[in-house]
Length: 133
Image (cartoon, rainbow, N blue to C red; front, side, top):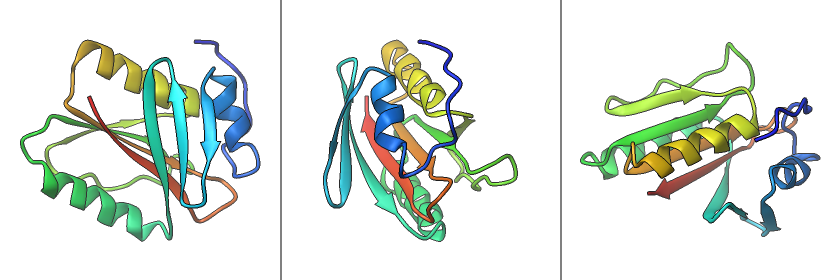
């Protein structure tokens, strides 16, 4: 992929940043559908941040047998989630890095499931997705 110097991820530039990666975005009231290079994502909105920890724990509890990767785009270096045991954690600095890491994992079949969270700089909401490889 390109190494683009982009602004921090915000509600106002979310669609633009995803489309810059070459994907197709469809905005819906409670989710964002995103297709990129044959991979299809249903990104849901979670707020407040505490719900993200609950979502991670639910994902960990619901499929203990799956090799799971959690890709996190946090607000900043100080903002990070405690990840439940059994989930591999990968912090990234951009939306591009998040989807590059997802594609690498999916293409190599490194994991059975990939969890993605994208924190927005101008909102208490976080976009999350569970992708079964």
